[in-house]
Length: 301
Image (tube, rainbow, N blue to C red; front, top):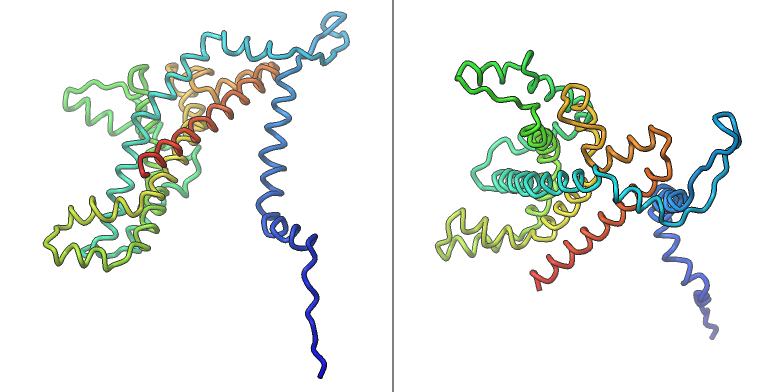
């Protein structure tokens, strides 16, 4: 009697197998995230010096962390960070609360035309950011906006592009654009909630609000954390809306947000300082996202 033995998987093949499955993610991540960040860090440690006047020779020399000190000492640095922090503290909770409310409404037993409203809520995310910003800029313009005209007819003189309101006007654009996107993530998580939980709570006499707040919301906590991290990262990447509003409002300067400031520095041939600011933004985004995840994990535990 002969027996056949299947050849054992070699240790090398077992070692390489996980990397083969991870390659579709790792290769783009390394090429389009780690390599650009690494190059920006290298560039932030060097500066370009010119010798021989305007038409002389340029040379790249090592400057250490001088570029970081120069960026941090700039007047716009703290102002732009405080502005983005205020933006995030107000806009993120409002947007996520609206997204959660819409997701719960779509998931309710009395909801009708769910596919239609899912599409309606998600459509703003499909509109390019520049187009959305231009559309809302028209609605904010005192000379063209029908909204401002209605407010003035009610004896309410509001300058939506003024220094005291333009940040909230930008926040309204971002909220309008991304509420449907976050709603879709939460709604998908709600579809995975076992129906038995809601049925058992309803038998015990719980109402719709109690089921939503005490059963559904705690179960989809991972989705809420995910949308919170995405929103936090997006806040530090705020660029398109301020850049568009800068053309129509003097309240938005070239250094209104850190991302816009980095773009302005690079446009002025101050590449090393722009790279230093970009690295600082990347580190701050990573640190705040990590702290947010640790905080939510500790609260959940």
